[in-house]
Amino acid sequence: MIFEIGTVCIKLAGRDAGKRCVIVDVLDSSFVIIDGQTRRRKCNVLHLEPTSQKLEISKGAEFAAVKSAFEKIGVEVTETKSKKVTDKPTKAHKQHEKKAKK
Image (cartoon, one colour):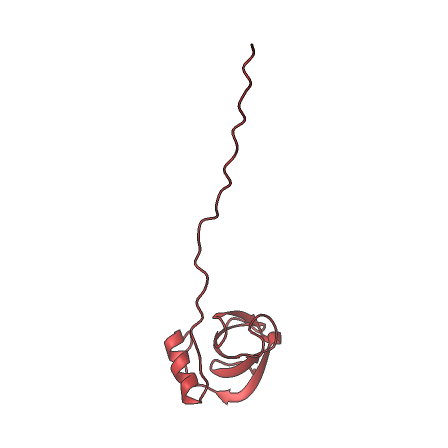
């Protein structure tokens, strides 16, 4: 299997296309968890192009470990912040005034 923990890949599809990532965990034959210049997320292996580089990281490594491993090979990684979950605003319903009968 080409996709092993620590394999450096280039993302081919999606918002993070063209960025480098490393495989942090293998879920099954089709999906892996990636991290690096991309957001940490589940990814289809068809959307990844493996490179010959391999990083020494453990399974499920935290972002700090991934960042330091990338710095050893000369790749700059910045932390991507996810959106904060907020309550959806509710629309105030207009109260219809009942017309009083005269």
